[in-house]
Image 1 (cartoon, rainbow, N blue to C red):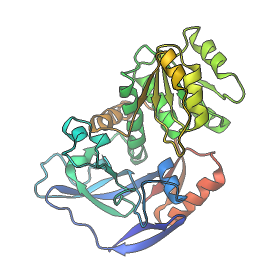
Image 2 (image 1 turned 30 degrees about the vertical axis):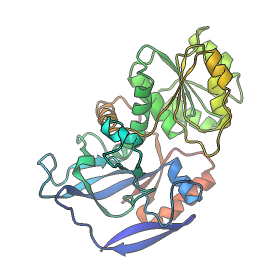
Image 3 (image 1 turned 90 degrees about the vertical axis):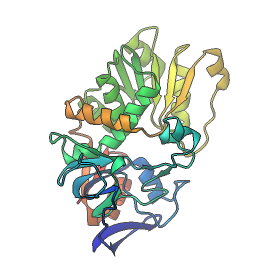
Image 4 (image 1 turned 120 degrees about the horizontal axis):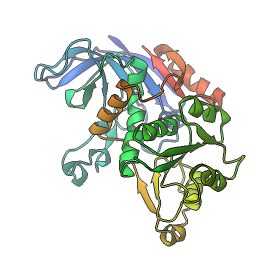
Length: 341
């Protein structure tokens, strides 16, 4: 028997004993070692996630070790391999799936939300969703591959950022990591914003040196000071709030690109007239694809990501509820909270 964390209702997690999973012929069995908590998980904790019902087993930002390999799995995996996995469950038959857009599958389910996640000691999963990591990548770094991949995919949606001037609105974990991905992908210069001085300090520690608080300085003036009169080429909105999408549109240069990364809890008002008048390109981005995970692993393995300060708090698996209570008490002065097994 193994321990499994089950969120039975908002604000309540129970630990249950369940049978040890067995790897089916096309699966591998992972000994889970790290689970990251993200903003969407917090929405589930508060009962605010529109696409999650209870009970639910969370856990989608995960790293672990292979302990069993199904008989039909080719020999790309061996016991003890350090791995991560893509948490998307797709249908394979809809238009997006047939055209290489599995991340926006018409019937998409995400482990930890619409289907069971890996908040348990051992987790069996299809080998096709699993990626092996080089030994140089730590378990903590491995559990950050998922949010890094969000940034990789967003940069790809913008058509790349090499030689471009980039603004990132929001310096939380995703914004910070996206900014790092953009710099590692050849951005000419980068400005990141947040109303939290704590997160701005974290951004600077991560090598994102142009960091400003738009509640203390005029954003348009800050963008002009960093990039000159031609301002930014690409703006990534990583908050999911009315204020930041408005900032993105009003501070955008004519003909520039805005990529919407943040998840919105309420429907924002958008000045479409300004989008039309300035010929702005507004793009959505959702999650990632396998190639984004591969690129994220490459960036971490080659030392192009500064991750030492990203994991700010740790809790043992049996203290899962304490992690959520701590996040509430920290009131935004945290980055990634990590569960350890």
